[in-house]
Image 1: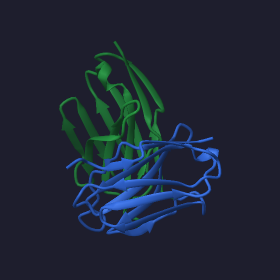
Image 2: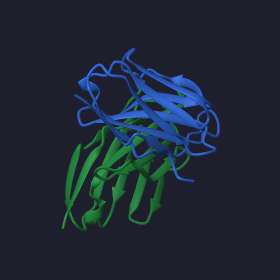
Image 3: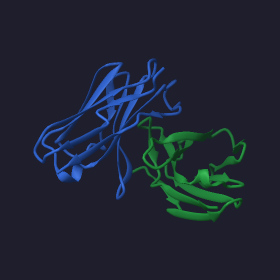
Image 4: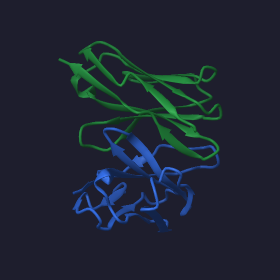
Length: 117
Length: 112
């Protein structure tokens, strides 16, 4: 398996533009996580899907952020409109959850470095 | 809300010395505690994990200990090497949400 795949790897955009980040989890994994990493705030969980259903989106900063998982092999994180404070590295991770309360290793993608000017 | 506290935020040791990083968690139902290493510009990668039915786990120079009563767990690296220099994150699962929360990270520097 190629591991978790994210695209693009780097994105530079102007304030006010829409940004879409993409993730392909490892085949067979049933849980997908979106994280944001900055120096100031560390690694923050934004949203978590299990079997393509959003379970916990309490980390999503505000209405400008939205995430979807239309099928088991694809997820998107969208920011509209983008702002300079959204600049960060966004990681997608996937894992296989064996059951309630039985979490396993999360495999991280390479990340997308977003810069909003 | 549920959280994970990690200390210290930075740690500098001499090559060959030991390094210890400590974390506390708030959810008494947590039962999975992984540690991730993140090298500069790279993704976090799992180095060791422990479940609540085990008090200690070792893998070569790395060990993790868990005290469920006190709700804290620690990472121990012995005979440190310059390539151990990285940011280390602890994490704990939160049973009700069935997801994971990460500590703020510890930047470890091993001086040759």
